[in-house]
Amino acid sequence: MGGLMLQLTMMAKAFIRSPRRNQLLLLLFGVFVVIVATAYFQILLNAWNQPFYDALARKDLPEFLQQLLVFIGIAGALLILNVTQTWLNMMVKLKLRQGLVEDLIGQWMQPKRAFRLANSSRIGVNPDQRLHEDTRHLTELSTDLGIGLLQASILLISFITVLWSISSGFAFDIGGYHLVVPGYMVWAAIFYATTASLISWHVGGPLIGLNADRYAREAEFRFSLVRVSEHVDAIALNSGEADEERQLNLDLAAVLKAMRRLVTAATKLAWVTSGYGWFTILAPILVAAPIYFAGSLSFGGLMVAVGAFNQVQQALRWFVDNFNSIADWRATLLRVANFRAAVTQIDTFDPGSSRIEFATSQPGEMTFENLAIDSPAGRSRLREDHVTVKAGERVIVVSEAGVNKTLLFRTIAGLWPFGEGRVGMPKGENVTFMPRRPYLPQGTLRQVLAYPRPVGQFGDEDFRTALSAMRLDHLIPGLDRNLRWDKDLGDEEQQGLAFARLALQKPAWLVIDEALEGLDDDLRERAVGILEKYLGQAGIVHIGRAGLQAGFFPHALHLVSEGEPASATAGEQKHGGDHRSFWSFGKDI
Image (tube, rainbow, N blue to C red; front, side):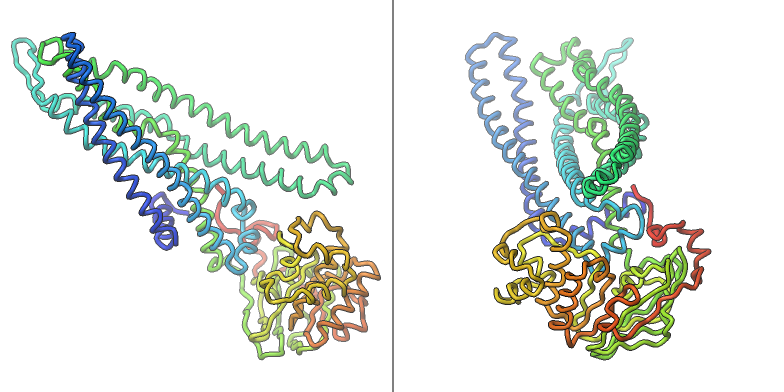
């Protein structure tokens, strides 16, 4: 993804289209009003310094007490404004995160995008990190930095006029010369803050890249932990804990290495920010001291000048004080913007391979014309050049050993477009794709069975009948329970639910990726019974082994290997050797 301005432009366009835009603008307007009001009362508080400290210098008790009452009024108003601004800041973070995550999820969940992104590059490996942690961090930093910059700007405009008027008549007597410097303390504050900003930029510049590298390593470590957590059974059965521990420690070492580099750079920056911070205690007094000792300022006037100087230089020092956060924000923006760019551009990305044409055919027909599929492992082709599967027909696709049949399944589904030929899907008719391992979404058992259709399309008797057809009657009392069904049910029950879903939904077309393979005889018999009874008029294409249910699948197609794909040499040179990099898209940050 390009530079900062391109990233900000892309995110701004997403914000403009967001349904949360008006709510955010209203909250930001409230923040602006509160900050302006706060600046006004801070000016009053700074002006209060002169009568208060002059009263102290004169030992004027009545005036001293009067100024205490004035202080209580000003401080009370500032307290109310500060609490209000805290609430507004938190609401801005909430709505900004809501809008950003809704936008990213909406883009990510466009048809087939998530699959394509997951197979395109490392950017798609851990979208959960970007959608959860990165978006949270980005919205919080953006709110804090943005409101902080606005507040610093308003305070700068407010107090720079105060400081200019206070120091407009400052004069120096040097060697018999009377030197007048208009706005003397303003120029001193600008010089002081500019020097600190330039040094901070020079010292802290590497933090942007180091933060980006750290987040990338953190994401990889989190992905490894999730992978181990999801496969603990297989790891334990194979006594693979030692190997997994070694790999996790390697990922942890990469995180710690990135953090150590970040610590070194942040420590160097701390020398600058902390040094200027401590010197700021004395800086305004040193700047105003010549005028004070010359008798041109009262003690109260000195405190007013010091207060105004501190406000101006603090506003000007906003960059210095927040450089570490700015570097963090820049790195997080880079990750989120890269993810959004990858998601939105994946549909138009062309890796240089020829493309399969996906179109609609006549109702009641699924067609394959000269279908060839390219992958880095080679090219496979349907031996039958012109295939028309009619509604109600049952076809099995068999292959030679070593041919990737799942790639054909993904191609028919429109997920894998690389190759040649044409796939025609029946116009206006529902096609269900059944992978080898069933997907059971989170929700009630009704939602699992109805997925992805609304539960309201089916009645209670429909759900009971579907479960009974697969001899899953024991699950009927739990239709309204919300569980992790992929964890709470055994493999056979999960496979049974997948076929019960077919009995419930009765799709007009069904494409199966070896889902009948590996089932025991009893479960396979029940599954075939579902296909015969509830999908008797459906067109069924099963990608599997020869000889499986030969009587049920009277027609056979043959997937054969043709060796190197037409664009294999260029593709492998450009993208590397595995199928994930074959769709390579961008660099993960």
